[in-house]
Amino acid sequence: MNILITNDDGIFSNGVLCLAQALQSFGNVSIVCPDQERSAISHAITLKSPVKANKVNFFDTSLEAWAVNGTPADCVKMALEVILKEKPDVIVSGINRGPNLGRDVFYSGTISAAIEGAMYQIPSIAVSLATLKPNASYNLVETLAYDVFETLFRHKLSADTVLNINLPYLSKEMVKGVAVTPLAMDVLRYQYVGLNDPQGYLCYWLSDTLGEIHLEEEESDYYKLRDGYITITPLQLNMTNIAMKSKISKWFQSTVQRS
Image (tube, rainbow, N blue to C red):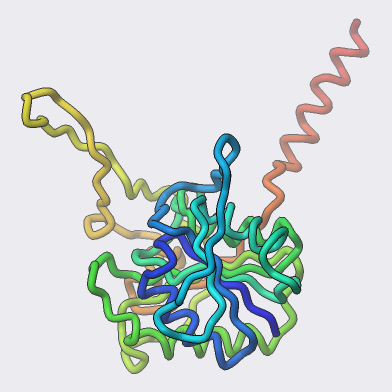
């Protein structure tokens, strides 16, 4: 199996090293990541400047790795269209520092890289870790990631698969299990707070209120992750609202008939 790894934390993040170590047992691993952190950049691609890919020494391993001066979506496009000689069987994005839950799917570079992969009809998986510690120990959860992939890879994933996986920052013995969850889309995690700059002018900064969120929906990704579960949320590419499509079509049919 050929596996492409990418992320949004940058080529030399400890999360991508942990992911590479976990996935090496399953097949041939290639790594194509941004040359610097590109968090919360969503599904942006680079249009008006050149994109370059440089081969790098990845943590003194023998793994083939490239650093791209672009976004996570750029990395996947470059890997598939330019860099890799063979099409990967699966794309894995992560391990991201910090969870990606609910509305985060629209902001996250980690998830957008996985979505880009699925747009090329390659099963794609985003993986995030539920801690914001800058010195987080990814070794703590490498076994968790390995176990999840071992189960997933025993089954055939459809070409348009996009999975959003969040790992609790717990040892394997402390994890309660795996929960397949919906996104908690009603949770407002990031909120602007007003601050005075050194000149006394008011400015605003996005505050992450993750630790303050009150959770009521016990089946949601937020709740299950906080309760000690690995969460998996299947996402879909086609955002067309079929019911609304049918309703609006009828509006305009009646308009045409009256005229």
